[in-house]
Image 1 (spheres, rainbow, N blue to C red):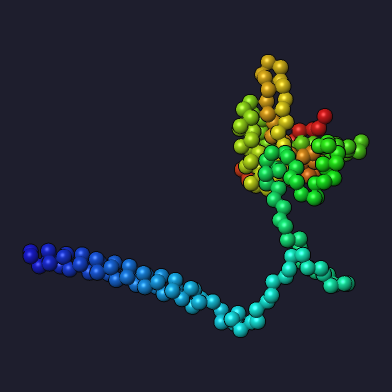
Image 2: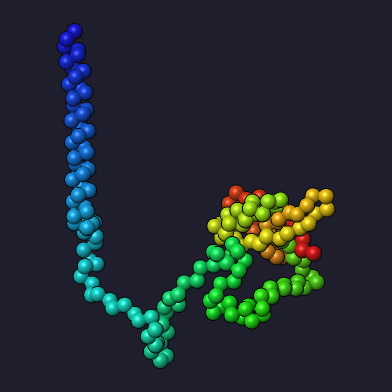
Amino acid sequence: MSNGKADKGKVIAGVFIGMVLGIVAAGAVAWYVIEKKSTAFINKEHKSAAPVAPLAVNAPAAPGAASGVAETKQHFEFYKVLTDKPDNTSRNNARSKNAGAKPQITPSPATEMYFVQAGSFQNVGDAEKLKAKLAFSGFEASIQTANIPDKGVWYRVRLGPYNNGDAGKTIVALRQNGIVATQVQTQ
């Protein structure tokens, strides 16, 4: 019987020693990678390439040559989408000349326009949360206030206006993102 206890002790000691050796080996590999700054994993062909001088941001382009480099200043529209406020970049200067007037889309009589309504809430905070979720999913939405008799003020989260086909495509895309929406005709 004492032989069984001795075998059990040897197994436990073997597992413990194996764990310690595994941890030591993992630490050694991590130390090696950190000390060598991951050069062991870099392709050697890239080291032989000549260094490339960075382009000056304000350098003029050669006459007749296409630069092929996009504008270096990035424009983030996330905050503009959430707050419905235009940003202060030059591409919005035309809008600011109109003193904040929103462009009106006038549909032709042959085409009907639709909004896609993603939600309607009595709490403006809930509407803002849905608008933010839509912005993270890549959709630009607005919040419209509606005063409904005997029910009070409701905040509608809407996208659009769209024509009938685009409204349907938007509803399908929203459904793929877990948002149930309906199509509402413009008035």
